[in-house]
Length: 142
Ligand SMILES: [Zn+2]
Ligand SMILES: [Zn+2]
Image (cartoon, rainbow, N blue to C red; front, side, top):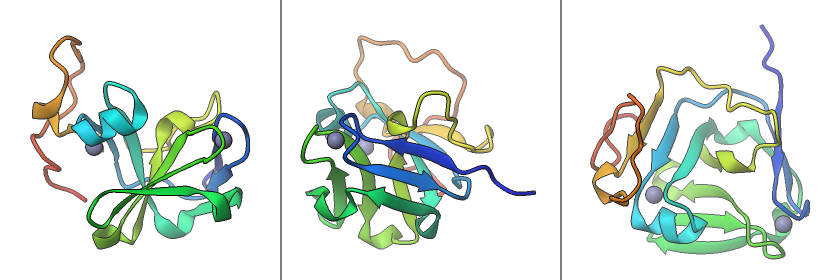
């Protein structure tokens, strides 16, 4: 049946987007680059098909920080909100920062396709007490 579109955007409202298909998976990334970029203990992404992401507003003005070769972190230049990752070698995917979904929205993923990545890089003073799969790097998938 039809997929109900998911809506999100940045903190100031300058960037707005819609997702029109579910993600292949959800990843909670504990790498140091995600922690620094997001100012958070880990960052949560949905791996959506690239053509499922429609940026309705602010797409032309997104900031682009290449945190490692071929990996672009796109953010709102006005409020600093991290919104999307685009990885050149995985161009078929748009990695959407799930914290930017509007209140009440869910990622729309299969709960069996959710996991932690770069687990060995996590901060050791916060206990993530869930039963999701955990891998040192990207693990399998993507
Ligand atoms: Zn903004
Ligand atoms: Zn990361």
